[in-house]
Length: 436
Image (tube, rainbow, N blue to C red; front, top):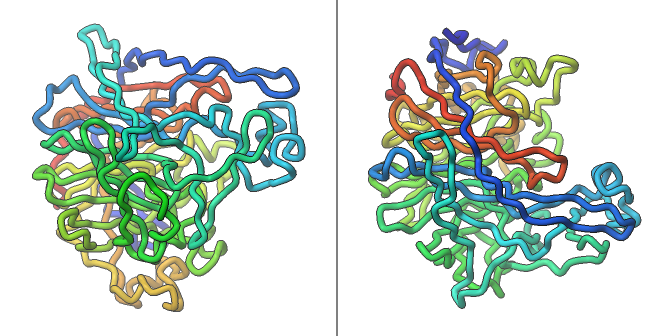
């Protein structure tokens, strides 16, 4: 059996409960080469599609079918990674901009994949849906021209500045509805978007006040999400998204604590916001405080040195039932899955969506949350990859095939550092039932 979930040192955060025993089977992931990219110094990198940033199994589909989505495409940090991976520093590749990104394939389009598992464990791509604007033109994964929140500069493989675009998506999560449309999440805005079956973006929802930055987008944009989400840390936006079984309710999560009011709060906070959302009225139905584990509890990541608290993140969530969610919490090597029950939880007081609130939700220490009227979500451990041989690193997608079977997908960062995409099937010894 897997180990029991451990209470935080504060004694406030995690419900103790035995996790399921589990068997892990590696499936044969599809090879999706993107070709080779060359740089000014003659260095070349072979790329492959990183298809596993998000995953989803739609109820009613065959149990061997699931969907995945890429993120924005291959990218390399100007600071440090450009020198390490390309052999050219930020001055040569990014005009000295330490905060920029090199995009080896600027024309890459974020794409949805339908995957089918064969009887022999081979996973094949059975449908491909790239994101498109209302005019049918392919969209991109390039940075947005944001003024209401932070953004970053993009650079070509030749080291030239790339023009930002409101049509860029850094997609991270996916859910498919009964009418064959999709909801996806995005880290740039932050945003969520409703996407037609053919990949055309029907509308993109961003934080209130940010919609003007998308005035030239090739699809409708509405500022209906809470404005406080503009406080997200760059590249730590809406990472998890799912839909209730009846398709009437969306759930989404920020990857990390907000930088609210500043980076110091982001770095030290252990509280991530999870939202319950009505896609018809486009209104938030509830906001919840999810407590992150302490980094020392991620054993594989802490083998040599304990990581920073900001290394702990929520990389995915999926609905098990109405208001019942499975949350993927990880650093890099260690992944934990927790069940939470929103129906049994209290919502965060609305005042904490006001940027003027002090102390902010993110500034409150775990021991101080209850005193300020905030009840954190209880978590029940389902699995911990430290106890499961054969689990890959950097897991970002969850597809629940049936109550005891999960598909987990990895983000290989498009093979920039030589990693392959991985897909594993996890069989639990007891079903994923509602949290009591």
